[in-house]
Structures are given as C-alpha cells and as structure tokens.
Image (cartoon, rainbow, N blue to C red; front, side, top):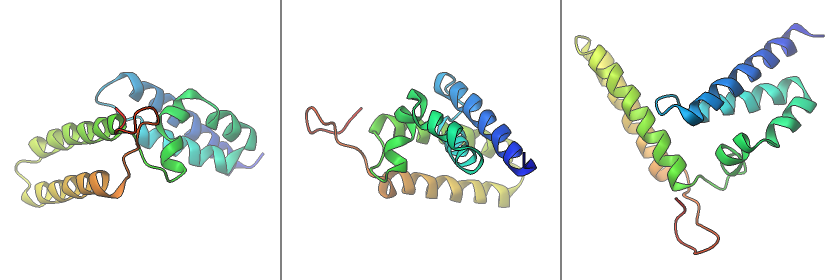
Length: 132
C-alpha cells in the first residue's frame, strides 16, 4: 500500500473523529474537520469515501455545501459563532502584538462576509422559509 494513501486515511479518520467531537462540543468546529475527512477519503479509498458520504454526519453538515446548494441558517450561525469565539480568544491573547490583532480582525471580517454573502442560505422545503 502506498504511504501517501495511508497518510490520507489517517488524516481522514482524524477528521471524522474531530468532526464528530465538533458536533457535540460548542467550541470545536465540525465543518473544517469533516471537509478534511471528505478530501482525504476521496484521495485514499473509494470504499471509505462512499462510507463517509453515506453517514449522517456528512449529510447533516457537508452534503448541501459540497453540492453547491448552500447551508442552513443554523449551520452558518454555528460556524460564525464558533469562529468568532475562537478569534476573540486569539485576539485577547495577542493584545500586545498589534499586527497579529489586525490580521485576526481582517480574517474574522472576511470570514463573516463570506458566510453572510458568499454561501447561500438554504430554504426550508416545507414552508419555503429560511431553514433553522
């Protein structure tokens, strides 16, 4: 077996584990770890990739985004709140490094702009209103 594929499988499993933790822990974002898992499994094993995209974890968090449809309002808010909290902690810890604070502030603002205006908010199929 190729070493590269082994590394991708290990990273994919790590991504699934951290993504699952991110589902239940409010400060750990699930989305980037699940995206990592999808990428790594796609590069390493068709069987693992097929298994992963069939899981509820994938379907609840990534499926609509990967298909280009967007995200639910609840998912977008959860991601923005998590990133805001984590950026705030970094901002507080870097209070003596002005350049670091400026970089963090810029990343935070661009993150909010991207999720507010760059990612579509899915409509609820039942009522036609924005999904929660």
